[in-house]
Length: 367
Image 1 (cartoon, one colour):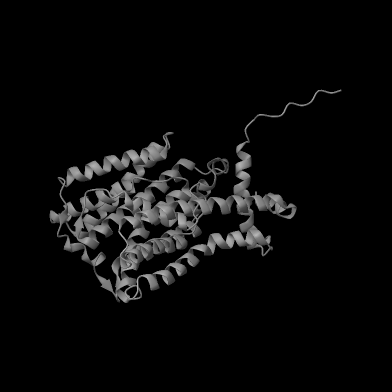
Image 2: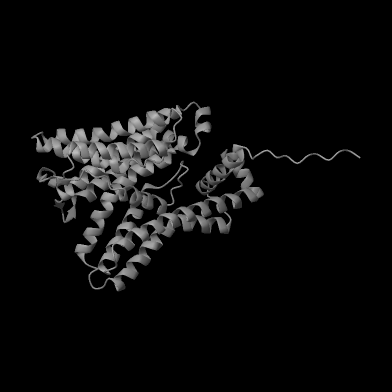
């Protein structure tokens, strides 16, 4: 009697995890070719893609009654848009970083330092364009440093947390622990309205539009997504992975600096203390938009809607006279819920795609 073969104790190879990604890609290819996906898969994709819009509609209905009569007013709408625009600028940078496969937690420190540097230059009589360029350059430099350290093998989370601490301390040092107030030179991009719409909304629209075009229609943007989808696969086709990882950090840093400057312009004051709540609001918008934190894909328009949802919740709870602490609790719950829902839909969709013979052929073609 031949001996029984020993059961393999090896851990699954990375190819098994990549099959999940390939399955997800296959669904996109099938849709593009007009092929009919299984009903459950279509339902899960619908939940992932349209669930955020449904949540927004539900929130509007709930707060229309709970926060009546003040919720459905022009002032509230403009306030929500303005808050969403500022949060959205941060979220846009975080999204690009996440799509590249990196999570930048130094965003609050970058925002604080950019605001302080811009404020100090304006206080010293520097021209507005020069002060703005200096503040934005801070973000690019911070992103560059984060990236160069991370590609040396250091954990990006540890690197960016350390950078957050360093930037927060540097901001306080430069400002001598004081707020830099009276920055009325920046009103044109902060408190000023154009056609009744606040300036930050226009800035946010430009940021999202530019990044969407960049990611969808430029070779560099598509390679950035390829690196986020799988570094090893990108490396095999000749993409310089480290270069694009650094670029992801730099875009995140640029958006963080821009967000810090817009925030400074809105309150006409540069605040040197780094607000950690910034990054959590941005991450919540990203999670609600269904952007996987493993990288490779995502939708910036949905992230913009995610920022609107977060701002709507904050405004609704405020008008309903709910204690402000609850806003942070709800934001945290949404972050966990968004991440959990995204993981569940992605895994379930991938399993369903991998289980069908017809879909398996599509997976083979997609790979």
